[in-house]
Image (cartoon, rainbow, N blue to C red; front, side):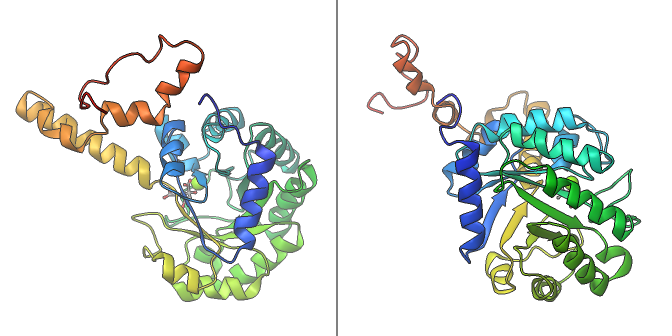
Length: 304
Ligand SMILES: C[C@](O)(C(=O)O)[C@H](CC(=O)O)C(=O)O
Ligand SMILES: [Mg+2]
């Protein structure tokens, strides 16, 4: 009810325990606070908050147009609606190392469990597109050092993402991953790995948890849970999957209304009123006022 009753500190501890457990942690991407509830209900380990989704949701491309204020506010709205730890995509950290430091503190204040900072140039682009550029090693490590020094909760996860694989190859990615860990990264996000073996190569290069990005229509095949687990991956994200699914369903429903003059044919694939009320915990608000939920939800049997 209302917001989650788990504190950000507890969520960060749970996330750290999950990463240390040896079990692959699955973090689907929430596109709004309500979808974070669904992710929790389905039994996932955590919630991912994608920069691409935050930008696309505003009707913008994912090229670094969103601001720290927007990202921290929306990520905070999502994080507080779930008991699960939430990790947010902080892109390039929103500026110079001093801006990165401020970013970390704002994200801590917003209740996030961690974030990732990448080594792309601005304007950045999706890691699975061609034509990316990465900053030099000195700039990349300064970002991470600033992030690690800025946090106040030692359990807030600083994950370093490197996009260098697509630019300079796998060995360069291994070298950079090692340097980023040296600079204080708690985890590594090797972007746009082509094969499971490439994930295993990054696994071999560093001693910290590593993340696999299973985004659709990208450079990586959609590897299964078992494939990633056997390559030693610790966390997998499905960053844009729910937004793509929801928008795909919305598009089909709009087409149905146009074609049929009614949405009736789409109703069976919709979340029902009862399920929606369930997810927002409607009935629980009766503890404040018993006249809040004193009706039969339309569409449910009288005995339900
Ligand atoms: C993970 C990612 O950074 C994101 O913002 O979700 C994107 C996902 C995507 O664009 O498909 C990425 O750069 O991979
Ligand atoms: Mg992103």
